[in-house]
Image (cartoon, rainbow, N blue to C red; front, side):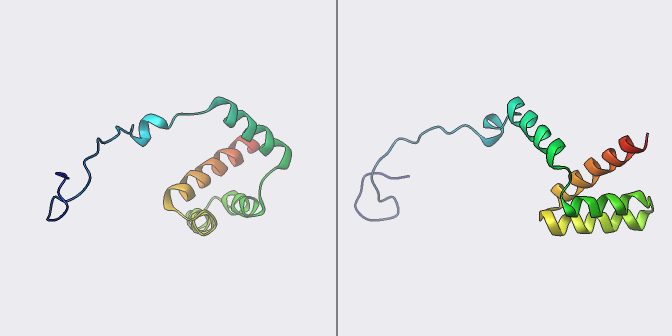
Length: 98
């Protein structure tokens, strides 16, 4: 905590802190953005790595699920994104088959 002193542990210019809202308050689902992304995805189709994952998931073995996760994690970078992508593509495969 600055006390306006030029030296010592509490040195520094006295300022008033600005209250910044937390990231969770700022983050909210954007309807327009999600609609635009859906339209683009319908037009362009799946990315090559997504098609590869879909082929793995069509085998419907446990080892295929693990391989699909590993590929998704390699392409997307994080555990959470990989699981979300795998589940999303599993739903697409199930929806396409029925």
